[in-house]
Every structure is written in C-alpha cells, then in structure tokens.
Amino acid sequence: MATSSAPAKVYLFGEHAVVYGEPAVPCAIERRATVTVEQRADTQICVQANDLTLDGFTVRWGGRTDSRPDVNVPTPLVEAAMGYIDGAIEQALEAAGESGVGFDVTVESDIPLGAGLGSSAAVVVACIDAATRELGADLAPETVADRAYRVEHEVQDGEASRADTFCSAMGGAVRVQGEDCRRLPDAPELPVVIGYDGDAGDTGELVAGVRALKEEYGFAAETVESIGDIVRSGERALEDDDVEEIGRLMDFNHGLLSALGVSARTLDSMVWAAREAGAAGAKLTGAGGGGCIVALDRSERTRTALEYTPGCETAFRAELDTKGVRRET
Ligand code: MEV
Image (cartoon, rainbow, N blue to C red; front, side, top):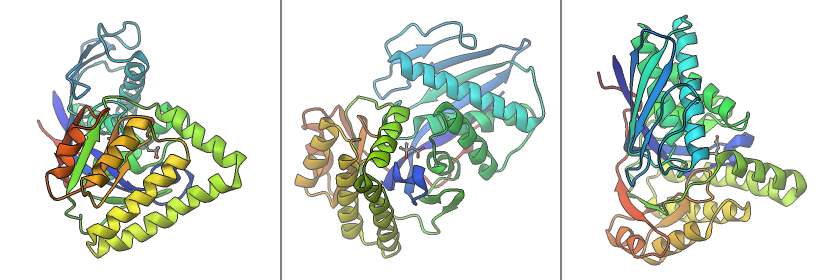
C-alpha cells in the first residue's frame, strides 16, 4: 500500500491565456488531496472517494465505470473525476512497465471539485505518485508532473496547459509557458485569502468558450495577449515583493477574464467585496464559471467581509505550500 498527497493551487496570474502559449504564475497552497493505492488480486480499479468538496459530500463508487456514486455531487464532476483517476492509473502502469494490474484507490481531499483550486491536478499527481511506488517504481516530481499533464490533456480534450499539474507536483510558485515549466526561486510570502461560492465551473466548456471568442474577435485574441503582458509585469512585482502592485495586476487580470466571459455574478461579488474590504487585489482563480476567488490581504477584514457576501459559501486564509507531491506512507 502507498499513500501520496499533492497540493491545491491558486493562479496569481495567467489562467486561460496559458492555454495559448502565454505565461502563467500559479502557486501551491496548503490544501491537499491524499490518494492511497493498493494492488488487488484481480484487474479491477475500485475507487472510494470521501470529502471531495468543502462541505464533506461523500462519494463512493466501485468498478471502472460500471457503477455510479450514491450521492449528491453533480454527476459530470464525478465522471470527470473517474476519468482523471483512470488516466492516472494508466500512466502509472506505463511508467512502471506493467499492465493488467488492479488497484483499490482511496481519495481523500479538502480541495473542492471544479472550483479553480486544481483538485483534479492534485488527485492525478498524488495518484500517479502513489501507484508507481506501489508498483515498485520511483518517479521524480518533474516526471509525475509530465505524466499528470498527459492525463489532464486527454480528459480535457486536448485543451490543457501544464500549469496546474506542474504546480501541484513541484509546490511553491511556478512559471509555466508552453513546455517551459520552472519553480520561481523565491516563493513569495503572500497573504492569500480565498472565497468560495460552493459552485463549480466546467473547465472544458469554459476553455472552449474562450477559444471561440478568440477565433471570432481580434480584440478577444488581443485580450489573451494582454493577460500575458500582465503576467510579465506580475513577475517583476513578485521579484520586488510588491504586494500592492501584485494586487493591482490581479484586479486587471480579473477584468480581462471577465471580458472573456469566464467570470460569474458570485465571483464578481466576492471580488468587489474583497476590494471594498481593503484587499490589495482580487481575481477569480482557475477556469472560472463559479468556484473560488483569490484576494491579497494581511488583515482579517477581507475574509470576514467575504463571509457576509451573498453568494459566498465560505472564505479562508491559505498558506503557501512549498513541498508539492509528498509521500505519506
Ligand atoms: C484551469 O485550472 C486553468 C486553465 O488555464 C486551463 C489550463 O491551463 O489547463 C483554464
């Protein structure tokens, strides 16, 4: 039996634009998905997943795709989660040069599904790491990241960047542009506050929507390029530890994501509540459509204001994770 965990992430800058070759800077936060993998005597993959949302919904399902969970998590999300786990097991078998091995897979996670915190990347990274170790192989985090990216690419119909999976495998703040992925040398000490509306977005649909806009309108394509410019300015602000400037650029980034149609009323309300409470800046994180915003504020005012904001289900402070994928047993 082998257990690994991997962290969630927030995007400081650059989601969506990163799909088209612009840079992005996500950073890992201390919320984790933990995956335990144990070989079975047969060739079945049996998955049990608990607490895949912040509210502690319980999902249990068995077999590869033959039975449905007995509970109240939206089915498309559960199906996507199944796809990610199947893909992760396939990658682990390939990496270890094995085939026809069955596993019991148990997922525990305090990362809400589809909420912009990289739940799927964390589950895939932890699952590949645990399953390869269960098979006697040992992969470097960079290799786990690469194999996890292949899973996301496949499940998201070819529309995925390496950002989520690289960040979850490596931890800290990272810069991703196409195939060029690296950790930023000094992880910034940022006062990250997260607001969550309890909802989820469909990454595939949201990415396809941005692509369609970009193909129809030159100014949408320029908006994507402008997000790349924001990321480059954001990198300089990160080097200078200039939280006010990082916040200003996050505000700008949110405006452009809104223009590309990936925000939501609840996300905009939380962003405005954070700004009015004195946050240095706030933006949606991840694919959008619903889920989480990320704000920067050293005081408790933003978290408290978010908790009273209509549409916000919960708000919490997040510490930066520096470890990435971690072996638990
Ligand atoms: C989703 O967490 C981030 C997107 O940029 C998609 C991707 O990078 O794969 C929207």
